[in-house]
Figure 1 (cartoon, rainbow, N blue to C red):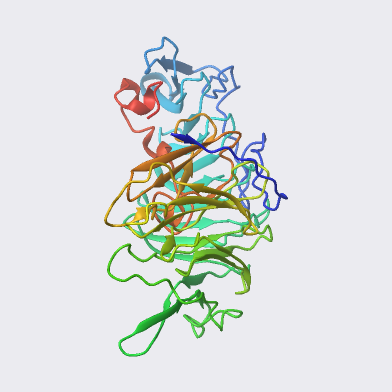
Figure 2: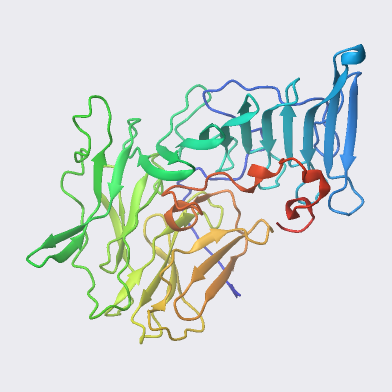
Length: 451
């Protein structure tokens, strides 16, 4: 383990600040009362608020403290009377506060679920059910108290996600700028609204070729219009992007190794203008940032004087909680040049804040350094971030970030999340926490240990 000490100074550009103490709010949707009774010391809400209720509690972690509570209500009268489950909730992390609650209708079917995914005492995920099956999940991924992600389901499977990446939504209006579409649970296409007009665009990084046989002259960023209106502009170049912004001549490799970089765009708002930028390496030794209408904002060299050096995809997070995101990338190069691996951290304006040689380099015939995008997250659950860098030559480097927080992870791993959707994370581990039989303690998610 290597500790990464951050002494970053910057102007707050992006509203990723600390998590609001207010309940999560869903833009464009009226709020529904979710309590079944008065709250108690463990922040639970499965409490009787009149006659005809029964409460059951369970200790599933073996610490002699109940961590699951069920509330039943008597429905019907006389011989038709029956107990129906109307609420159940659980403490997932052993802090004696209820982190997730599911509400049921009079038939015992799920109707609504609320969850505190990061265990800070504030609800940040709301799940809605229709006829007992999940139909909509709303998530606050930024910690500002406003829903920014909505995932729609049919027959229990996700079919579409809408995300407000730039904070354009308000209480009255839901204004997404990212759309994902799924078939049988798999991502089939992703669209992004770069210019704020409410319509998604298609973004790619093609190579530009000349001669016979073809020789790559440069890599460029291409933005095409989506299929909107009568479709006459579908797949046409977006206004402002008619001339493709491009890099310099790409770095050449004599032979097969190291492999060329894969120019994958990172699409987030780093400037604070509520429109996403495109951050990408174009295999020429520079990381670029382009604005929403194709203008180059900056480029920063990661070449380090090497003849051959490529970079990973960039990831983005506010590492020091100042409201302005940092950009992370790793480098790799010639297998026989054993100081090719770096972890670089840039400010939102492209300034190099940290340039860290990866420790204990080894040798691997594929390359030296780290081809994979740095992953940022709180692995050990202490509320502070870690950075993970996978190398060719000496395994996984683990950096800690003292003083950091988890409230602003804009693009935390390759393609934006573990589902590799080209977008931030989707649903988290709470998806199946209320499957039938969970009270038996047969799953690690109900112990006091980290799942």
